Length: 567
Image (cartoon, rainbow, N blue to C red; front, side, top):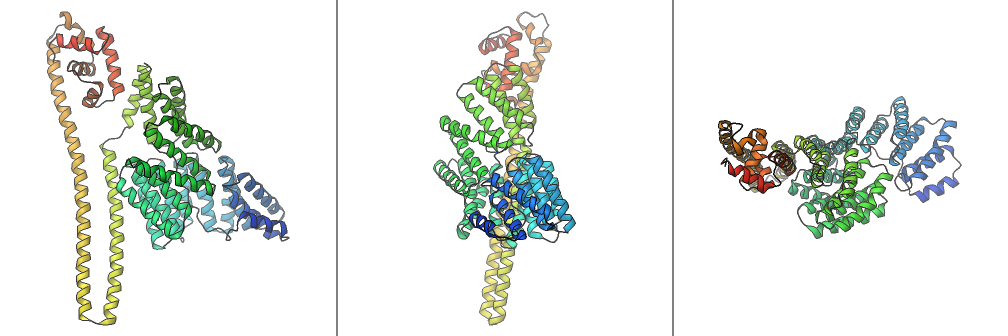
């Protein structure tokens, strides 16, 4: 259930100066008499404190803007506007943030500073992202890309962020394309910090589409790089992501350990949103293991914090989770209160998975409290958006693209190694070296062939599984159609006034199908599987059947249908 937004968006540039810590900057601010230097320090303090002490950051940036009104430093003015808008975004004041960021864009364009212009546009995109307005976010990212034609690294950073946006909008195939494009560039320029971010994002995508082996692979790749480069923040993100995969694989102890490690690091780094999201994930783990008291305690503590920082999607999904716990504890009044609030909130969020889950939750709740009309209505909406074979095919397509990326990567590495061997051969001019190179080349060709065969076989296997599933479903459906056609032939030969069978003409075709299944002694779950509908839908049909037949329960209904020899 974790649709929590777990990722930090990457900024577009190396900051103007190497940032000193806040205490050093404050000391410099007290001692400097240079106006330009004072403005720089105020801007640096604003950038430094945006996440740890946002009120102070806004105060320092306001001081810098006040000085810039009196002194003409155009580029510093553009940076101050950008950082002030960014700090307002962190505070959750998105409309105000966009106002200042648009001013920063205008200044940057006038100065002909493409990187700064792009940075401001992508920050505007981020404000829309935090409001879950994904289309606007992607549109501003594309505007930002226009100014980065000469800066491939910065382009890749924007692609990585667009991958995050697309994933949270439910466009997983597009997200995968953006992530892979970004990772290729980061590997080419050997930027390990950005490689770690992209690898964690790809892993999260594969975890979401249930390709857990690929998710583990990319998280472990990221964690290895973090340990080699002492990247503490990346380590926390990797532990957080790995815990989610281990949760799905039933690796409980490892999942708890990695979650707690991530919580500890995020707390030390002062990353509030990441800390809250990881605590949510831990609560979600407890919920999935039916440890409702532990889960409810954490959900209740993070919910007001998400509200405080105006994190709408996180607040909505936490509200939904609290409602589900009350539902499990049979406290239907509170469950309805929280689940309906969450459903209203998700209407403003572009997240198909969240929408689908909340519809199913509400349908089950309404069914439990006897509001069958509402249950039928919400379940009908759910049926329109639930997963199908197309989802499986799309996931397979994503995995195939990623496999092609890894194949190209291995091919490039082999070509580099072959080039090195060729150089070595020229230096030594040795016949034995030539033979060795041929043997190595043939071995490498064999390895590549095996890899290609493996992925081809895996793709065929997945397609065959989907084909078998589809054929099985069609066979079941055809079998049911024969049974129901036989029943209808019997029904059509009866007269409306034929004693006990007169009720048959009151039932719809679907109701007669459900009644036939009741007569065969099927459970609600079995009926739902046979008819490809949910249990809530089956119950709704049963309710109407009981009313039309004037019976009290399924036993009496089954007795009626057996009495007229329809089955």
